[in-house]
Image (cartoon, rainbow, N blue to C red; front, side, top):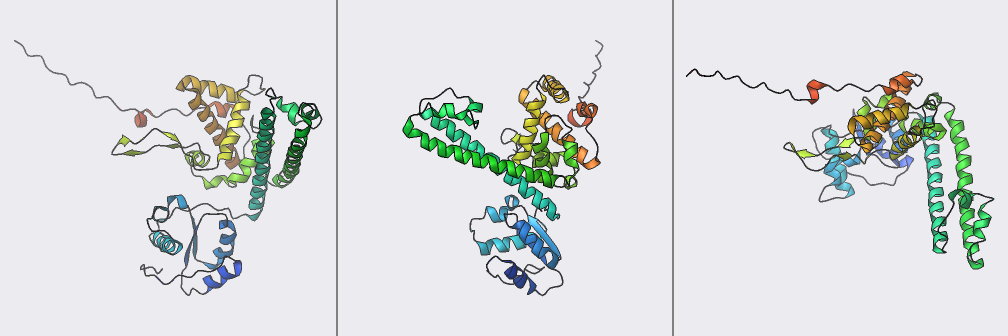
Length: 350
């Protein structure tokens, strides 16, 4: 599409590096603005095409209402809609990291999380199979322990033991893959000094530090902590029309739930009474006293944990318990409405 909105043609071709370079190289124009919707091939395609264009925009498909909610939807129509939005500069860009080493580290961490999810699924399946055989009181540690599981297998009928042994083999393979991947993630994480800073905070741990560093990649991509919270599924969504609410306020479901999970585990570990550093517990109790709602106090603590990690990363600073316990003072001029003084009426003399 030209700058004036004239359609210049459409081409359908297979997705490959040669086709992308060939067809894009045929466009003869002084400036070429290219738009790609965020997807699994975005990082691969953007690295190939970015040097060939004047401006590359990776847009968020959730906000392209003209494309996603159109009554007549197909690839050809979607291309025209994206070109029109690009011409009007109405696309919301998505941040894409330029560092290839960071991409390798990010992919390794996501593989680690996939192996973790496989272990969870197999654990739940094995427990369900035991319950189907009437064994209800299970000890989670002994059932999955390589040496102590044999006592539980002997409680099963002989004809059922073979299926359980196959499930245990799958579980051992998933656990072994997770262990090897953890060593690889730890090796790749040595190049990033913020991971050691993250481990200073109570409750984060080794895995959580690597997850935060790999998924966020660059702390300067967020201008405010509210953007960080929304990216971590901890932002608040409110919908209203003409000043009237259309529903209850809730957490925004869009974002990276793994970061929310890391903050939740840090909160759960930090609120324990036997911790050597009890700053998370003290902050949570103070927030609970101030709000009166345990869930809201927990979410405030999770946001505080992520904000502290983000600040440590940007400033290259160590964890300070005194700064963690500080809470911002509310702005009375912005949140509270000033009350008008009642007008004084003069009393009439009779």
